[in-house]
Length: 262
Image (cartoon, rainbow, N blue to C red; front, side):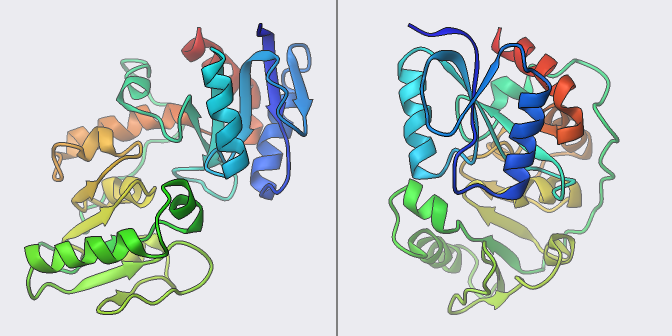
């Protein structure tokens, strides 16, 4: 039987930004939050960072199977030096979660939209990274090579740029790397972004570059329309702002979590 309150799982290994967020959330809710370093599964809400890691994925599935809720933190959609994204019961906010945002008003400053696309420009292929490969049981660069081959058939002669995930400039034969540059520069002049679920799709929504993606929060915008209108992009980003928080906003984040898990 699950009890009221929240278990905050602060285990290892964990990035500094994740630990900082979870510590801030624990400090802002000392009355009903219990910190653990190993999943216990005693409280109705489980909170963790990096749900894609195998051990935390197992804890997530176990907790959901027991009838609990899971609040997951991971790399933020913007202000990434300090902010993290919040997801409920999964790896990314889904359309239903975005619909929970207030009908009007923004949380934080509005994103400044740009129009950086070039219909004749290269396609930007975005890599998965090792954690996602393990999560989806894919071989190294399996998804990327398969997607690249499909793009070659669909867009013969079109240049394809490559944005690997991670701290190393992983090569991909037949592409031009756009790894060692800010994401705004990597998106400039592209005709299309292709990814599985990357936060780059959110950057592309800001930059005005069309997107094809299989999942992630941006699937709510691009899922059936790779070229949404400017108002559609602005509305998506406004709603997404309610799922992007920094440690200094921990108290307000708790208010939002209670509202969306009630």
